Image 1 (cartoon, rainbow, N blue to C red):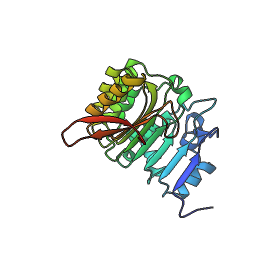
Image 2: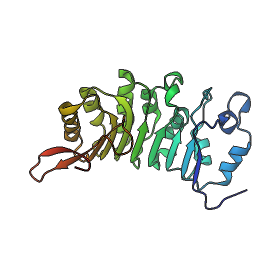
Image 3: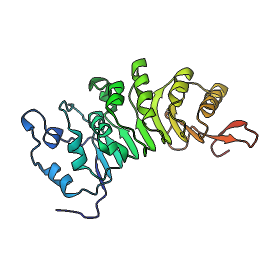
Image 4: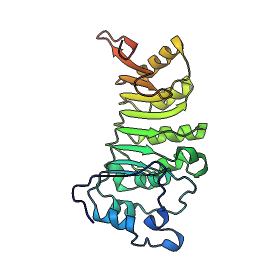
Amino acid sequence: MTFPSLRTFRAAGRAYADFYPLFGCYEYVPPPENALRRFFMRHPHLETISLCWLESDEYHGPIAPEDVESLFPSLVHAEAPPFFWVTIAASKLAEQIESMTLTDVFRWAYVGIDLKDIAKSARRMPKARRFKFNPRKLIDGDLDGLEDVLRLMPALETLEIGIKFETDKIASLLSSTPNLREAVIHIPCDGSERLDYILSMAKICPRLVSVHDAKYKDNVGRWVIIRTPGGDIKVAVEGD
């Protein structure tokens, strides 16, 4: 069955997909024409792909960039496990990607993926406007790799990372995102210190207009950046 107008495919939550026959690995090389693969091949106009996080296993096989290019030629919005994003970032699809969300957050420490290695193999993503990444933690080496990845997205406007950063770390990270307009991060302080923290972010990112504390949901914990004609910068709670 084919749906000519289909532009979005989502298999998220706790759905479990067998990625081995989809992409090919070990005894599955080359990839067999399994049902899910045939479905994607019949729908080359899919623009949004959301693949589940892996509950009990990881995919350990290599994926050829040419394979994802042929399966998802129209891809612009992707939500996928890290192993899949590695290939997207290294493929020609990187040049057309507009938003990327990395899933598999609870297993990030175990999938054996290094952000610096991703940055080395990745292409520039000139159209990327949104990047969401929510691991449990990052070590210093990972933070350096994340900076390298963000530099490949010069037009990035929205960054969502749900972990804590010290002030000097966030300053270093945001220096890689000069066009950032919205930041969703875990703010590690309260009261006046929190406002100073957000103000420091606004000074680094001249286009920043909104900051949302990742530990809150909906519109709670959201601040707006006000820039006066005289060059002053103020921070206000959204809605005040």
